[in-house]
Length: 413
Image (cartoon, rainbow, N blue to C red; front, side, top):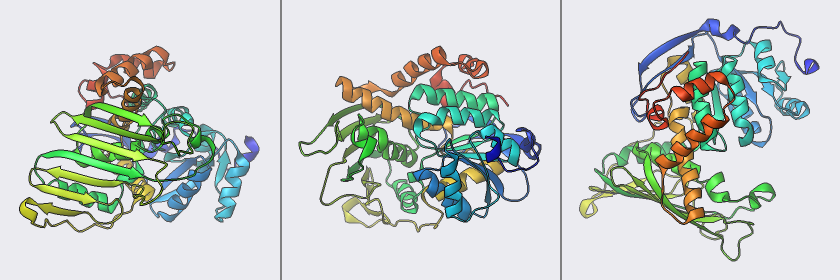
C-alpha cells in the first residue's frame, strides 16, 4: 500500500473538518419535512474528492469529476491499483494519490468528500469507512444490496454526522424535471405508468442473476416516481416471468402495481428481452390526473393535454447538468450549503424498499406492504450490526418508519 501513495505530507483523516461547520435547518420539500444535521464544507476552492472504484462505471465518474470545475480529484482508491493507475494515465491525470484504503488516501490528500463507485456489495463497508473518517459520501445506486444494510447506512450517517447521498442519476434529466412540473398542473394524480422494453445482451453475471430486471434496473423508475410525486408507496403486487425466447437464465420481465397512500396507482411493466420498438432507457411514461394527462417518451420534452383536448403548456427546461453530472452538482451544493439533497440516505431507503418488496411479492404471489419490508429489515439490522455507535443509533430510533420520515430521529454529530 505504501508504495502506491504519493510521498506527500501525511494528514489526519480529521484534518478536513477544520473547514467544516454543522448546520441545522428545515428540510426541503419532498424530503418528508424532517430536520437533519450534517457537517458541511466551507473551504475555499474546489471540493477535493476521492473516488473509490476505477472500473467501468468508475471511468465515467472520472470523466464527470474532471469536467466539473467545482471539484478536484485528489485520490483514487481501488483494490487493483494497476487498474487505477491505468485509468488516470488514460486521462493524463497526474499527482493523484492512488491506494487501496479510503482512510489512508484521505489522510494523504486532505480530501473533503468521497465518491463511491464500487460494486453494490462493497457499498456498505466503503461508505461506513468514509463516513467515520469524517467525509461525506456520494454513492452510486443502490445504497446497499439490502434494505437492512441501507438502514445501517442511515444510522451510520447519523452517528458520524456526515451526509450520505445516493446517486439516483436518472432523476437528473431536464425532461423529467419538465414532466414533474407539468404533472403538478394535472390536479389529483390517479395513475402513472412506465413501460420499459429493451433487449440488451450483457453477457456475464446479469444474464445469470435472479430478479435481474427488478434488482438491476427497476430501481431507477421506482425512484423516479417517488421524485415525480413526492410520495412513498404503501404496497406492491408484482409478477415476474421469462419469455420463451429469453437469453436470461432467470425471469427478465416483470409487472408491478404500487399503491400510494392517497390512492394513486403506479404500474411498471418491463422486459429485458424485448426486441423491436424499444423504449428509452428511462422508459415511456403516462401521468393521468383530474385535469389531464402528460406523456414522456423518456428522452424528449413531455407533452400534456387537458380536458377536452386542450393543450397544456410544458415549462421550458432549465438546461442543468444531467445524469451523474447532475447528481455530482447537487452533492457539491449540499455539502457547501447544508441543504439536504433528494438522494439523502434516509429518503433513498424507500426506493430500495420498493425493489425488495416487489421481489418478495413476485416470490410469494402476494401483495406486500412496504412498511412490513422496512420493519423486518430493521430487526435484521439490529441483529447483525457490529459497530457499537451505529447500533446505538439504530436502537435509539422510535421506529424505523419514524426515523426515515424524521420523527423521533436522534441525529448525532
